[in-house]
Image (cartoon, rainbow, N blue to C red):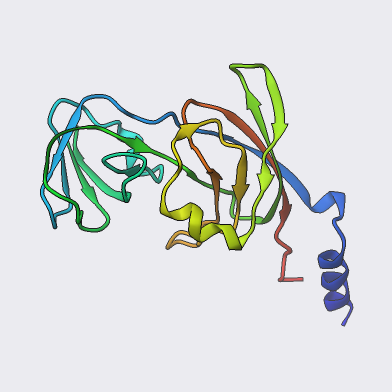
Length: 193
């Protein structure tokens, strides 16, 4: 019963020893060259582009534009070929500007909840807190980013990856540049006491 009491106390109070911090570096959108895709397929072909190697491991999205439905990239089969996680349902595209962007970032496995995210804006030399948003805004946010720009809010109410990795989503704008974000989080309790 002492172990259970200790867990109850640790959950009830924000003990400084349970708080940790980490860093995320956002990815600027990739908008180089053009792509082609056929309706009801998952094969995205780079017609005048070379896709960055990080697009698969880094949770990138592809869309014809920010106002269009997006698709996660499943695999990168070559410098000029990507496979989407689900079939593209729009009209066939032959030479559309490439738009790969990232709004979801993985967190450490010991992260229970994110408390604060501080944006270190290198362009203007500012440091400011991103506004936390909850589950209620997730559905609206998940559909489309409004455009690209400096993110001003975050949520950690994002479904985890298939391997259980917790994520954070920034927005409502897809980052238009690389930004350093410092996040403070409460560590998951060790339940094997």
